[in-house]
Amino acid sequence: MANRDIIAGKAKQVEGALRDAKGDFTNDPSDDMAGKAKKAEGKLQEGVGRLDNATRKLGRDLKDAVD
Image (cartoon, rainbow, N blue to C red):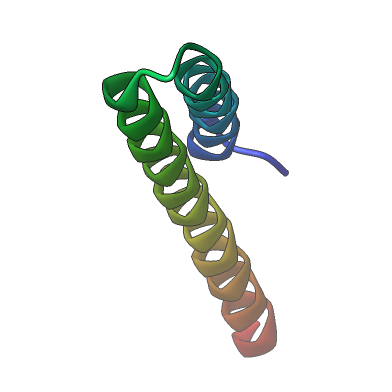
């Protein structure tokens, strides 16, 4: 199940990739670096979403094991 952080993280990665490509195409280092930063931000946010999913699943599994 995808949560909002995973989806938003992937969107930021796409946005960063586009800006990075624009920076490469126009030879603009500020766009290049901003794109790389946005991609990293997206990867981090996606990771937070995946961690959230894993902890929720672990909680459900532990609850089921106790019941």
